Length: 180
View (cartoon, rainbow, N blue to C red):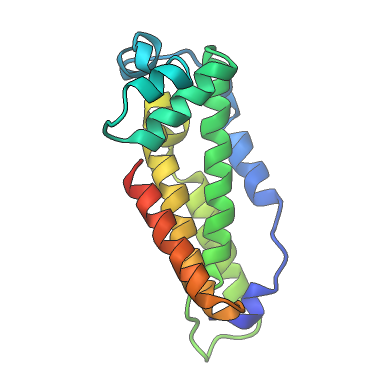
């Protein structure tokens, strides 16, 4: 691990840039598969309906839709959750980038600039658009959340008093990613 990079404070302008990039998604309507998967699907209309549909495929993804619907069936809430998932993934990408091996010949501070650029690229790359702006694309952001958290827990397990518990957490998070 790059120990110096791990101590750099989180640059809050990174999620601010991502919010600005995806702010227009909050006013978007449901589209395409959103109707079949959420709006017209009674199994996504609350916790009881979700539970009655179990066992099923992608249970955590469908649970997220059911919880979202329980709070409000409006598209705004679904889009807001997708943006928040993306922001959490940006923070995880930042934290994971502290584990990138850096060439020893690099001058001081270059690793931090590379780390910033890598995280900014993750936050703003157009490939993220479907996962953030398309409600049915939540599967990718939610799976990434659990997958990135699993990787981070595994990589940082040795820095904690109970590394086996952290590795167990990592495996549970990986299972959650698979269940998404």
